[in-house]
Length: 206
Image 1 (cartoon, one colour):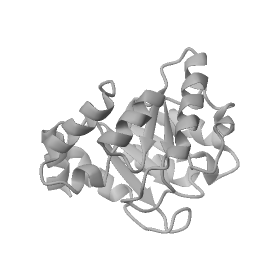
Image 2 (cartoon, one colour):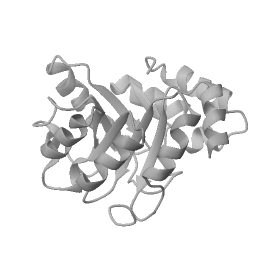
Image 3 (spheres, helix red, strand yellow):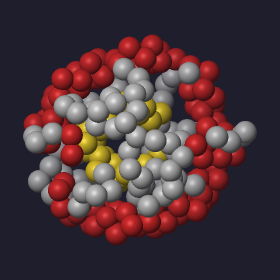
């Protein structure tokens, strides 16, 4: 994994997105804080940790101490999103909130004062290689307006099914962070794949 991290860093990635799955909130299992800790000295990239975990609060401290620069928690992962985001910020980490396809954008209306990044899931979380859900484009537009209305610098990320073509759709709708899995790691030339996403979507640098 350290070799792959080095490869995407050399290829021009801005952040390293780390999917943490618990086999409960989503069907798969992935990594824990020890792996994040082991990777931390091997890369200068910001670590963007996506906790697909429920309940989530008991894991925030461990991933913050392991070296996360941003931690995303799911609005669907528990009843106290506001408190969970406060917990993230208390550890000096940028706070992100992720939102699944079935959840309306209004679910984030009361926590925008606490978030640095909104992560819109453009697939159902838990599996790589899924097709981009174009039904999420209106949600991205709505969240962009909601975020801008706060006057705060809130990034809008999209995660799932990102290709050069869908990157363009997402950024036109208001996204400025593109999370790419198989469209980079499934390609022979990582630098070319990353450049293709930037050309297709033209996101602002992270």
